[in-house]
Image 1 (cartoon, helix red, strand yellow):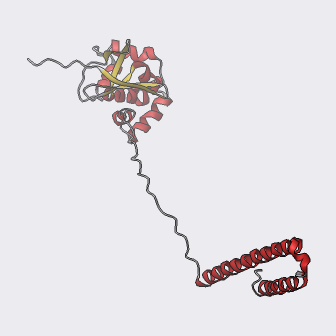
Image 2 (spheres, helix red, strand yellow):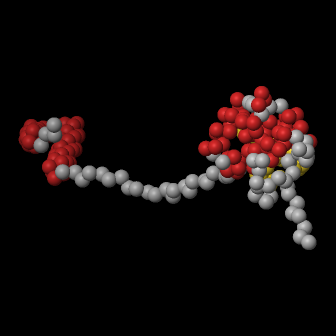
Image 3 (cartoon, rainbow, N blue to C red):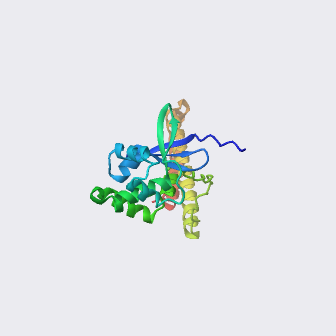
Length: 222
């Protein structure tokens, strides 16, 4: 004789106030309070159905007629130290249909709305989908992409070289001019200049200064 596996709650959640869960055998359920909310009735009405489940009352017969197999109305389980009355998805659907179609004066608009909803979407799959973990997208590794810099045009290169050479010439001329000016001041202030060498030396320095001015005028960088 095979032992009946012990069923335990592995997952539990509430969606819009409707308690639901999944068992260790993969089946899903609604709580008594969640089923009552789905049908638009008080929790006590669902409890009464469970209490009368083994009777032949008309509403019990109407509900069982929609079931392929008539097992127990619910299972009594424990979750986080609290007692749950777990109703299988097929039983929930039969009770929902009863309150939407067969309850006479007690037909509930909310039950009719939810019945139409779960005609389009399977109730068991809806419950099961609440416990599917979304896939974590794989992160794409960072890749270094060098920036493409446009190559300078040939005319730009030539202009840059000319500007560089002219700058060097202008700098050389300025350094030479400064050097000669320094020599001039030293020569004018030197003691031996008093011996009559002032005029020839001054002429030489002026000639050199005029040559530098011509060089500066030729290689002027604008």
